[in-house]
Image (tube, rainbow over all chains, first blue to last red; front, side, top):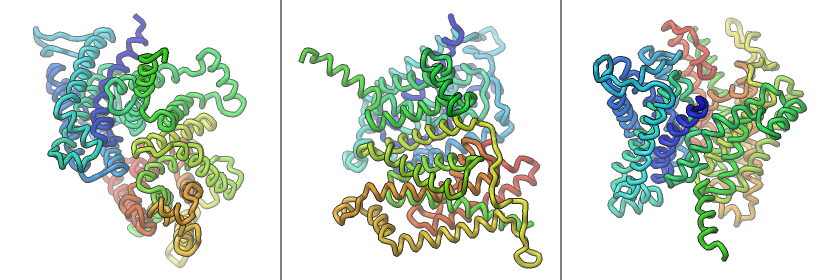
Length: 320
Length: 268
């Protein structure tokens, strides 16, 4: 199989996990987070460091790391009880930056040079139970299984009492409280669940890229995560998956080598030579993503899921 | 040493304050939701400090035009967007502008030619010297503050802006063209932001994301000072500047030799 393709699919699956988790928070509970790169970093660093220093098997390590992320999510959820809208965005943004700088400064975390992920061992390392997963293809199967499980988990969670409580908070938090939904418990729980997903995604991401440094978990990454959820469609698991696939594909594949595209690539190079700089063409990805974000908000606030619903409705009653 | 740190901190803080005012003005008129819109304002700044800028006023006029254009093209067509929608919208515009700037000027860092130098000092009274840049910042901040105060207190437009911020529907009934007020607000915010950005560029270097960190701090300053009060924002900025400068100094002495990342710089 094509190595690059497998790598791309792995990244997409990781982002699907994250987007589904973020959608629980943003789409279903109606809270804003600009700090998910922080939880993502906690997952990535937590998993790798627990495996490296404590020699835990991978499943235990990733779950512990995700629980740490969930605990941090719970902590962030506490001020969120009093903050709304833009203020919450700023608070979570501050959290994300803090995590990034703490990891970047502290020597235990490998400092600013970043760390290399240890061998991915499902069993107990250095014993007869050791079972090391090597290569992109094997990691792909592991990630695929986890993605499917987590997506089904999120889907089912939304159909339970907890999921309905989340949605009632989104629609009207005062009414929800009057109906007996405990805002303290459910808002913080939503943050914790979302951070747990981000932690799992981060742990897997560490092994996909196999080398990461603190400053790749920056604000831009948090923004991209949020864009996935909004472009895909708020408040739907399918939407989050579609958004994650589209944005990751654009970011990692299509827009990365924009000058090699048929027709459009040549045109862009010509435009660059005429008015812009050819070196700067690498920034075209940002322009395209920005335009997609603006267009989605102005023309299709429900995102790709909204488009999907409209297509479905159209064909349901097709001849009429 | 102490006085130096204090003055320096106050100067940087004044810059943050100025920038924070740009943030607060948008908040002021376009209500709570509009606050996130200021993310664009940040991005607008990077566009202003072109190394070959023709003239200071030309840049400022461009700033006003760009602020209005963004309001007109992106915010106006969005019908009653949610907070999250506005956030995505402004972040989208930010990425768009950053991308355009990078496409046009490349990502390498440039020096920004500026009238006032950080290195040339002027002795105001014996034994007390300040560099030109610091004096410029203090003068500019004071002038902007006084002008804004007079504008919001006495001019028709300023009063209309405050009315729009307090209650959009009531303002409409009173015959205020709310859309036009928004547009002018964006222009103003962009103008003040451009002023602050040029001062920042003179201190650090110029590249498509040189305003990222100062913007964060300005935002923090604006929140610290209270988003609805302009003097509050400037005071918040001053406090932040002083804290940052003293911490930067202390950090330096702990053996970490990259003060830049603590001081004005970007993420290391």
